Image 1 (tube, rainbow, N blue to C red):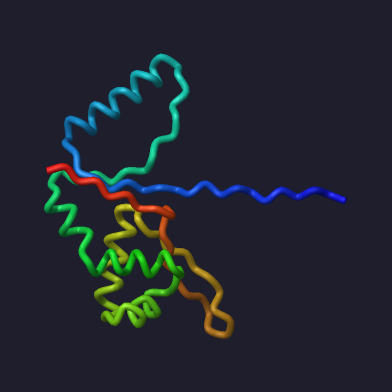
Image 2 (cartoon, one colour; image 1 turned 135 degrees about the vertical axis):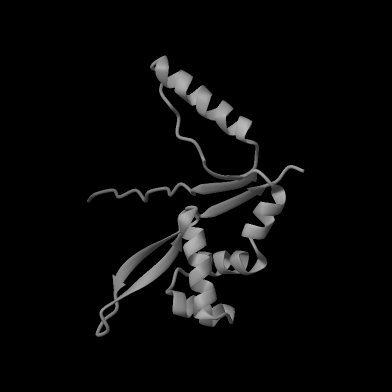
Length: 134
């Protein structure tokens, strides 16, 4: 009899934060110096940084946060997401495109039996951590 251990899934994290360009270049510089020394570069948390806290709040609107929570519950097609969030398909499509552009969601195709294929929207990380400094 074979003993099968269940894989422990690592919850992925995407950090959305505010920060300056100087902070960004300081982080990149430290990673590059470590690489130049031949040190092992540890994987970092995926981070989306906004310079202005108001820009971050504008980007992560209430509608987008509701959409993110709905996708977290059940990845689905844009039309189903629009129906469940009581929004127009065009508005959800616009939000999905913006979220996909910055790496918060991703789209993949699945077979829709008898109807070809359909796109499913899913989060790229299981947790989203928001940090803002004013």
